Image (cartoon, rainbow, N blue to C red; front, side, top):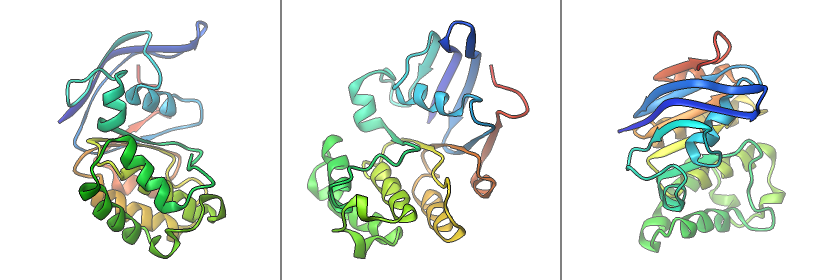
Length: 210
């Protein structure tokens, strides 16, 4: 299974390109993108998720769908945003259920999946709590659970442990290894604690790729 970038170019403004000619094959396993803020890590994730369109070049998805297609975004890719992005007035459980419904998963698939994720992330007793009543660490774990709900073959995590203590970080690391290591999992991070998860590291500090 591969997610392939071929000669990607992208710029927010014409005088400051983020990528000029980025090519890479992302394979099954965990790839960590490390580097300074503004180096292009989040931009690359958004291109791979289809939230941004490349100025030129090509992205070939594992299922053959266009990266900009609604079906690809609905079923084939899961994205965890930096800002957590939970629906604040809904419970943890309802946030997870909504993610499954948007991916059009039947109840016999998502219900046991929900139970498993809540258990693995230590959220079972918080399942009925509104998202805006969670602590920072609890909200980050709930956001990861929602991201993983649909079982997408490609998982994109943008700073999943930002600002978290070691205990919360360890919970997230264990679940990523258990649940995402057999998919294409790409993590953008400043957090050196996540480097030990990587099958591959792309260092945006040493040289901006492409």
